[in-house]
Length: 326
Image (cartoon, helix red, strand yellow):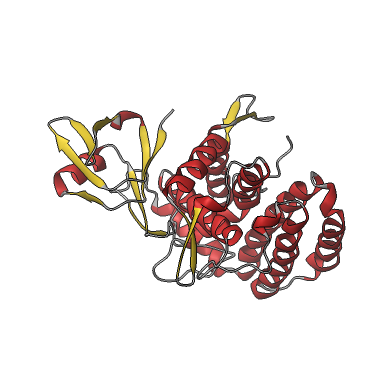
C-alpha cells in the first residue's frame, strides 16, 4: 500500500537517473517513489523541475507547510482520473439549494456523531455530552439554511472543545478555540492536525473524479479546495482528536515539544515527528468493513466517502456519511 512521506528536515529533493533522493547536511537517502502516495514538506526543501517532472509521472501529490507547521498549498500533478459528467452533476447538486443542504447536513451529522462517540468514552465529560445531544436533537430538524447549519455545528464544537479540560492534562488547558494564530499548545495541536487531515483528504479526492473546489457545507471560494474542508469534518474528531487525546494522556507530548514566537504557539521539530508518527499510524489502522467484507484503513475510509459522493451525484445510491461502528 502506498505510504505518505513526511519531510521535517531542511534539504533538497534531487533526481539522479531513475532514483529520487532527499539530501540533508547529514545524510542522503533514496525515496521509494513507487510506494509513495504523497509527500508532506515541513522543512525548507529545494527541488527543481527535473525532480518535479519525475514525481508527476507517478502521480505523487506534494503538500507544503509553513514554519509553524500549517498547510500552505499543494502541487497536484496532471489529473488522470477525470470525468466531465461527474463534475457537471457535482455542480448541479451545489446550485440546487435542497440538494446542497442535504449533503451539508450529512457532513455535520457525521461530525457530530463522531464528536459524541469520543465523549462517550470519557466519563468526565458526560455533562458536555448531554448538552451536545440536547443541542443536536432540539435544533437539527429545524435547519433550513447552510448558515443555520454552520451555526449549529459551531455551537456544538464550542461545547466539545470546552470538554477537553475535563480529561486532558492541566498543562493543556484551553479557554477557547483559537485558529489564527493558535496561542497555546492544545490549539496548536488541533490546528496542526486539522491541516494534516485537510491535505490527506485532498490527496484522496485527487485520485477520484471529484472536483475539490466544489463544496456544499463550506462556501466554494478562491484559493482553497473547499470540498476537502467538507469531507474533513467527518474525520477531524475520528482521527485528529483521538490522536491528540492519546498523545497527551499517555504523556507522549509535553510542553517541551512546543515553541512560541510572538503570538504563535507551535510544535517544534521533535513534537512534529511524534505527532506525525502517531497520525500516520492512525491512518494506516484497519477496520473490517461490514459491507465490503474486507479490511479498510482510516485513510481508505476517506476515499470511500469520495466514491459514495460520486455514486450520489450520478444517481446510483443516496449518500450516507460514515458513522464509525467499531
